[in-house]
Length: 136
Image (tube, rainbow, N blue to C red; front, side, top):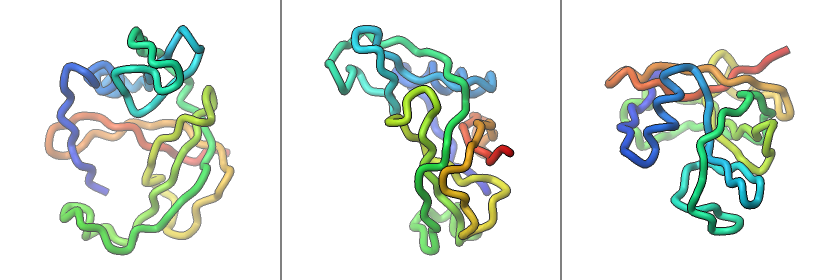
């Protein structure tokens, strides 16, 4: 499925640079020992502004899913219907990411299944983005 190509700015460049190296990094707050995603300028828990980018394992579990039958995004219309799942990270289950779950047929998303991150290059710019695949 073709992905939209993000254009990193100075704020989120560390995330996208790591993706291009097949590594998953997210923000970490040392003051309250919490991870957060998507990136923000301050910790959502304690408002600390000195956040670090920290590599995580790239493992998680499928928390929920929907099937998209009617998207307004023109580049995704040919691929309808498609899965969108929320992935809870192993290190911090409150942190979730989205995935199309490449290789998983529509309506066959195994809720609770273990997943691992993979990185796919987007067609317009080649920028890699994280996706997730079911393991086991």
